[in-house]
Image (cartoon, rainbow, N blue to C red; front, side):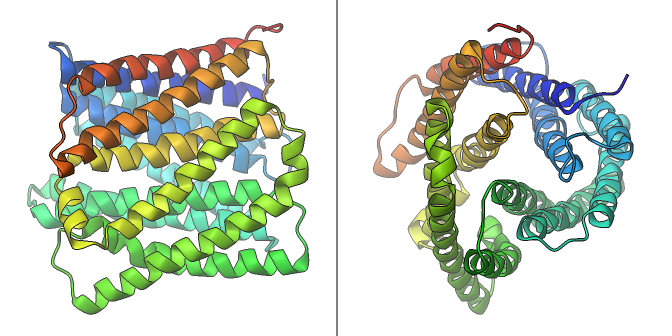
Length: 398
């Protein structure tokens, strides 16, 4: 039986549901006693499955059918293997953390990525502006794995240097979040625009700036490491350039998408607005890291770091992936779908507000009570939202 795009994307949303379940369990373990599962193992399982089983799997589906309506046979095979690896990592990380099985499966998922990138470059030789951004994202996906291999080497040899260890983790995260995820969703969105020569040139120039910036602004992820002053100045310049060129891209998107935007359902419009606000906030937070006091506060504040990661993962990437499925009419927007998207988007916004409040208010010597308990209820809200979206795609009427 041939697996359609709709089938694949239903599986992806189910994977998102599992990601949220794991996140909810971790939230519960922070606030209350829960003897089952080690928190560290849950975290590894949650993050690996979120990256591989939800975001990468979904992007592979959308990119695998980039030129056609159906995912071709070779991409289908890669999706099947990636899905098996994702579920293998889901359970192996819970059971053993970083062990032989989980490391083998992680390595295999990286190899699958290499094959996917090779096929995509081979099948999409046209240098359209959307292709350029997506190929940039795929490059950074490959590039990010250098951090993974560095980690694997240290763990295998048991020769762990703490600075290199954490720098490798943030290397992987930076080039996944700001490279692979960001460039790919920009490319997918551009595909929905009718561009003239002038705006195409603007987006092409912006791509080159963002590509260079993505490499240089990795420094923002390791500001706790002693770096030369010239490198910090260079990073600051490209951080501001990033924001400036994002404003230019944003302007192009607003102008060129306004006709299509007018006829979209109101829930899709609201989610696009959330994504836009969240993306602006992302760049402003990066600029904030250039201020010494804030830099020292943030680099030692785990909650703020988690808040930033969730801002990109949930408010930008996840909301975009959900909404693009309905903009391109791959999935059906039904009554329960709309309700589910409303609940989910409310949940992710509240999650950001409370995470940043919990992490940021201590800077002003303000400490909020019961935030961990509130975050559990917010996680449940997100869970209900995903479940409703999932059910709505099964039920033909609702």
